[in-house]
Image (cartoon, rainbow, N blue to C red; front, side, top):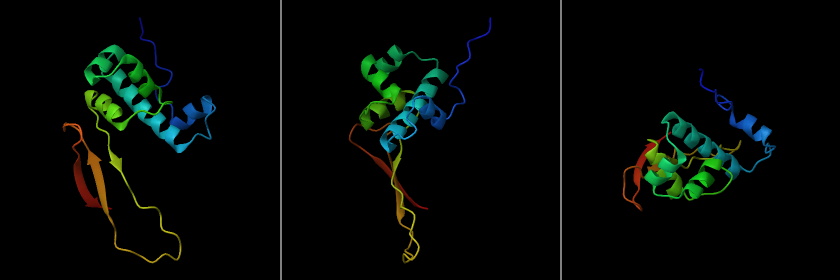
Length: 131
């Protein structure tokens, strides 16, 4: 017997938002939905149930459902715990906005990438680099 194919495999975030009639979605919603899609794909890739993932991440099944739906804001700490269980890390970065014509050129600013993977809560591992 052939396994049932996931109809969402290979679909893009734009097609998902269009199907959900959220084409004019806010940037926050788009970001949380993109993270949720990544977490769902990782969970399926590891053949892990929601109950098992919630237990390993130290959260409730209902909170995990909210994180995986992508339609509800969740704390970065909660998202990070779920991501770490799935072998992923949450990376937050700030980048310079594009310069406007006529702006004076400046030296490139250092880029800071922060991640807390494998660290105790409240600690941050920072890596500076330039773009």
